[in-house]
Structure formats: structure tokens, C-alpha cells
Length: 172
Image (cartoon, rainbow, N blue to C red; front, top):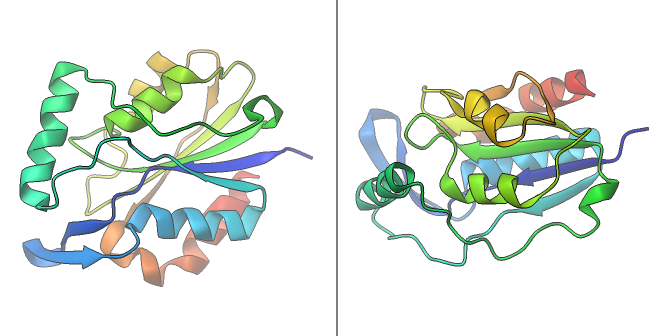
């Protein structure tokens, strides 16, 4: 039986909802999806957290994230999972930022050894899906088995537990 980790990066606070409306979330959309996945498949859950705090204003934050991406900035994370070598399968969740994963996720991927591990990506967005994130992930983790990922509309995540759980179980 595979040892499973659900690792995710999720931003709390302001985000864009349908109609370009700004909403304030106590728990980010990707965090909610990660909880559903963990509940469905078991294993451990790990939140990727940044040392830095992003600008609260979402419209300004997205440009901060764009600057990080364009500069190739490695955003420092607070820590990594204990006993990472014990995991066979990692569900890896993140929001789509500028058609790929946030730079904190890149930092996370580059720090750990992925040889022989299976990565099952999932992302939240308002319609742009996984974008280039799988291709980018394959460049960073060439020794991992990276599967096709799950794409979930962020503003709908709280109503998608059954769908997300079924998707996660189908990957086991």
C-alpha cells in the first residue's frame, strides 16, 4: 500500500470570484480541495507556507507573483515534510498563478528528492486550469512520475467535495 502525502500551497485572504468580484477567504480554495483529497485517500497533509507575507490586496498581489515568476525568484518556504522519503505518492495542490504554479511550489519541488515518487498535481483557478504547470514540473522533477492533474474552479471548490474525492480516489 502506497504511503500518501497531500501537499498544498494555498493563499488565504482576498481572491477573485466570478464576475471579477473580490472575496475574502479565511481558508484558501486549494486548502479546501486538499482537505477533501486527504479525507478521501488518507495519508498525511502538509501545507507549504511562505516565510514572506504577500500583499493583502489581491490585484496588487498577482503582480507581485508575476514579478517573482519573471525573475525566477525562489520564494522561501517555512519547512518541508518530515520523513519525506517514506512517501510514494504526493498529491500536490496549488492555485494557478500566471499559467503555472506559484514560485513557493517551485522552491518546494526543487528542495526535495523525487526519484521514484508519483506526483498527482491538482490546481484551483477560475478557468485557466493547470496551464503550463505540468510541463514546468516535469523540468524540475525529471525523475518523478508526474500524472495528469485535476483542475477545479476555485470559487466552486466548497461545493465539489464529492467530485474532488472521486477524482482523488480514481488516482489511487
